Length: 237
Image (tube, helix red, strand yellow):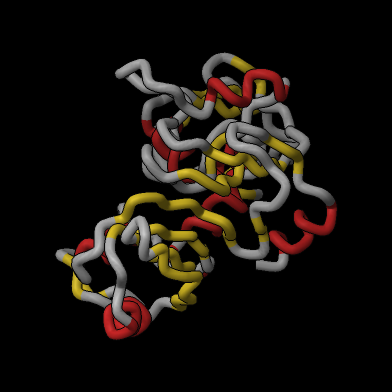
């Protein structure tokens, strides 16, 4: 017997948090009885579970890497009509969802999956999943300012954890600095805000790594399925 929201998430319908909302909205039936409270348990091998009028079917879990371009919203629908994730996954033939978010103007690695349980782990702060970004900022950043990022800077929502910062180089002709920064927190627009605090606003931001996954050989807007080794690395987190 497992909690209903966990069963729904494992079937790939939604994340566990979204599954809880679905249950509370009265959109789930177990053995013909509407369930609208959390804490109910069921056995998917014996109980008949209906979500939005459709029988719950166990799904094969799928994992994809997506190179999100700039100018794309990390949602499945956008009321403003902007490009979003659903515009890129139509050809997959299955429903997958983004794990976490990337800002509208940030590009790079995004994981797509129908494994709600794994998605919750990868985004939960307690797991401290490391994420690496390649950053280009306006101005020639002194070493002392990069050290501030390494030690942590004070944002309006508190002090950031120490970051790993590796200088790539200076473009003195264009007046820009490029470096890699690795963080494990998931605050909104964190890297951009950190750079604002030290006085060097971000010009370009690209996520190149997420946990054991690295963005290599994938063009902007392209998707590829993770290989078995990559999936196993994710499962070890």
